Image (cartoon, rainbow, N blue to C red; front, top):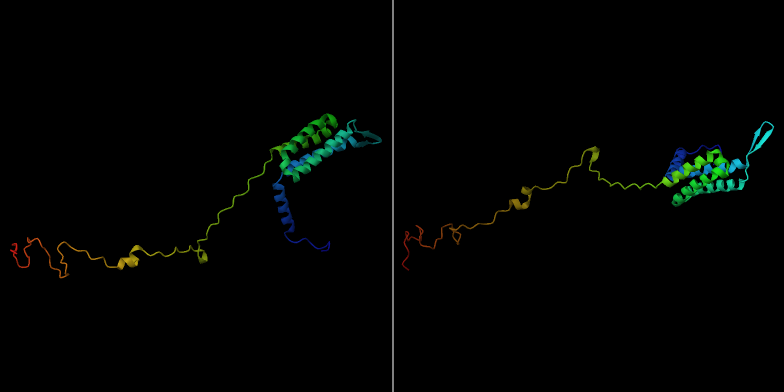
Length: 204
């Protein structure tokens, strides 16, 4: 791909979203502030300020200590980016180095590096990873074609079952005959009609 070839559409947005996702999983701003705090602490003791024809040297007798503090702060900032499990240790160490830089390195880089390192260390100690999002339950789509609600599955009513049309079992009555002729069958002898006995007991 040549230098004149434009970037693919949406490539910048995709990179930006990837960087945002990477940044959200670690104490990014804490590491950035700690690294920025280490730069002035390490730089000012070795810097020279030119005022007209006059050169001002801001170097101190503890210039090596200032360099060590600045380098350590930069290393701690990178550790916060790529080793987020040491965030508590790195944050406490950054705060201690920022305090030590006040008497050692020109008031902590003229208070610029001191304040940046203090803020970064506090952010590192207070940072905590967020909870992962819970998977949402997949809801079944109950809509039919055209966006209309799908009809519920057909269920036969109780009276539409086959057992509804089955004849009820034959119920015998106390006076029904056993031979199926429909005539009463009373053997007690007290019935008015007892095989022509007219209500009297048979002799035999």
